[in-house]
Length: 77
Image 1 (cartoon, rainbow, N blue to C red):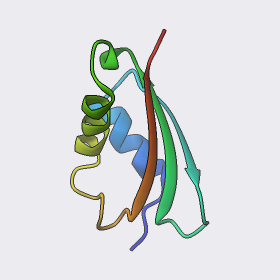
Image 2 (image 1 turned 60 degrees about the horizontal axis):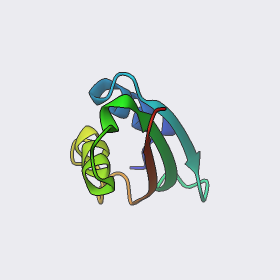
Image 3 (image 1 turned 90 degrees about the horizontal axis):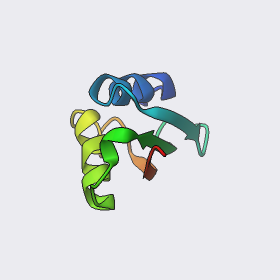
Image 4 (image 1 turned 120 degrees about the horizontal axis):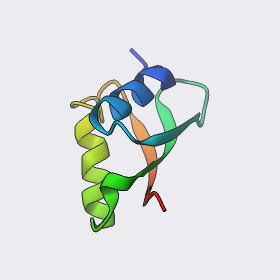
């Protein structure tokens, strides 16, 4: 069953409360999304650590309910 973009945003914001999240459905199928996540909590973290924080927020849905996520993360300035 596909994921709704609002659910993705809610999961990320629950784990990273200050996050600014932008989600785009790339194919209109609920399986392929692009996400931009900006947060102060990413300060001093590598890009890999930032992505890991977002994937952890998705609580195991990556690769199952959520097939593909093109992810961009950055520190809020």
